[in-house]
Every structure is written in C-alpha cells, then in structure tokens.
Length: 173
Image (cartoon, rainbow, N blue to C red; front, side, top):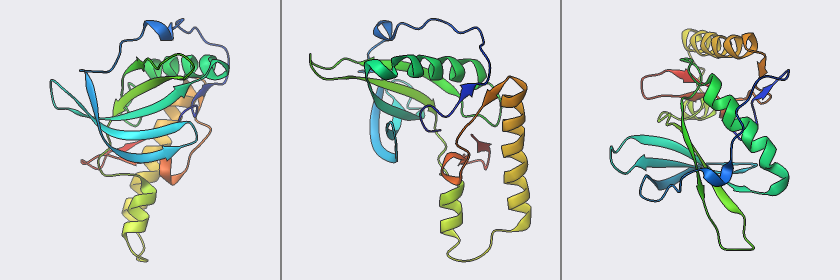
C-alpha cells in the first residue's frame, strides 16, 4: 500500500500520535532489500531481528508539511488493518537523522511475498490469467473495499501494484 492512499471520508476519532515518541527501529527490524518505490519513499523487505518474521517496511522522510498526513495514515492503518484483505499493520518507528536532515518514518506491515497483481500479470508472459483467478482476485479486492467503505474510509489508489498477494494466495490492499 503506497503512502497516503487511505483516508477517512469524514472526520473520525483519531489518536494523537507524537512522531518523536516512536521507537528507533535499530535492533528491532532490519532492512533486507528494496521491493518497491513509491511517491513517498521506498518499500523494503525487512525482518524482525528477534523472531525472523518478514515484514514490508515503508521508509519515508518526515517533512513538517507532511506530518499531519503521516499521522493520519498511521491512525487509519492501526484502526482498519484488522481485515483479511487489508495488509496487517505491525507498527511505526522513527529513525532520527542529524540536524538539518529529515527523520525517517518506518511503517511496518505484513509482507506479501508473492508480489502484486501487476507482477502476476507480467509473469504470465502474454498468456491470459484464468477466469477463476481473475474472479477470485476481484472478489477479494471488493471485500477489502467494502470493509473500508463501511468504515467511511476511501482507498484513493486502487491499481495492480497496490493489490498484493501473500505466499498463500491471499489478496491484500
């Protein structure tokens, strides 16, 4: 899920998040490799250092003018990622930078190891996806969107790159 794609369509109660109070990710998560680039930063395959659990870690610079948007995204992820078709939110961390440089926010979420629907289509090398697969993916996308919409949240960026697949063929927004 790219940064800033989820937004409440109406005002909802949100926790006030102090970005400066977030923990440093050092010793908790480590970055393994870049798996995607977005408008707001890079997404890495990462690992929890103690458990070895894989995670998707979105790393983005925290600029003052984007601070409120970032807080909103954290709140929305915390509140609405408890659905089977929404990538699970694990936590947020702040990596402090030297004075004069922007701090880095690490948003840690469920790792979807099978890539995106765009990756799936490209891997078919010109062959059509089976109709059953297309129907399954569409149904799961609609379930995720229905959940978000029932909670007055809009996604704002549905596209193949933002529809992810787990190693167990689960579909996640």
